[in-house]
Length: 226
Image (cartoon, rainbow, N blue to C red):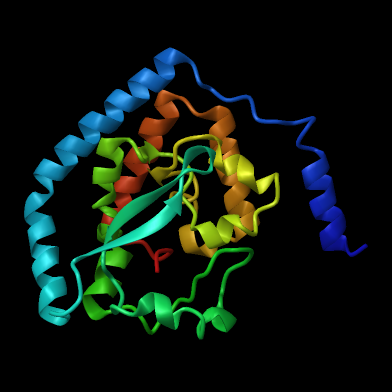
């Protein structure tokens, strides 16, 4: 058995001994949901002028393509939902993905390349500043997502998850989390999983607020976002 296979076997076999003890108290979940609803509603209202500007910029660069990009993601307990973003890529980005997979610069089921040719000019800016993620405030408002939690993965990524990795799906996914404030695209898949599980084990209102405040800094530009 290879070292990787031994490592995976150890991780999977350890689940029964170290299954995550969720902080699912009624008080925490209620306060968290109230913060999510208030934060999403206020954010959508205050950021509406920015939404309009970005929408116009996307249409000017690519008049034929849509403003928003809806993508199927996997949420809590494996339930799928539509996650919304500002479109930052060419209209046929999904079709072009297969020919780019060999250039993947990250590990595991994730796909990231720094100079992705599918990204538009305005798309590069809104991804760098994470503005493309702002429409997910709607997902938060309707309850598909939380402000803070593990990022919702794609179905094709989940298909490659081990039982250990699937623990990421025990809670409602978030717009931001420990991964985003700890290095984002420079962090590999295994490290991302460990950060998500660390959050799930330790999550509380104070930690959520700290992560939200750290995430605000990303709006000023992050060298780790692409």
